[in-house]
Image 1 (cartoon, rainbow, N blue to C red):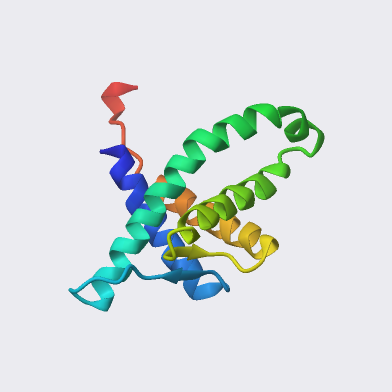
Image 2: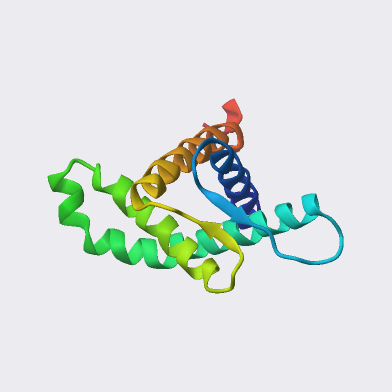
Length: 133
């Protein structure tokens, strides 16, 4: 259930970022309609981004641990941009999905996606009652 919520929040964040920056989302062509195509494409791109972030992102973050210390964590912006760029490359090989025109726009887009995910993480966090403490 947490993965599905994470994918939906990521899809919303990617959609918001596509409205703000030069990030593009191409739709999967099939019969129903444009809005449904866009929503399904965003959900699939968000699921791929979550898998890339989980698998490749974990490996890169472990290997780049010394850089995290040297840059006081600022390298995470570049790594998140790289993960978004990998997602765009992966979906572009099927001629649909995410297109990132410039690496640094990808870094800005990844920063905005992280901020939106952070806000929704605060909102959707399970509340603990006073008895549980």
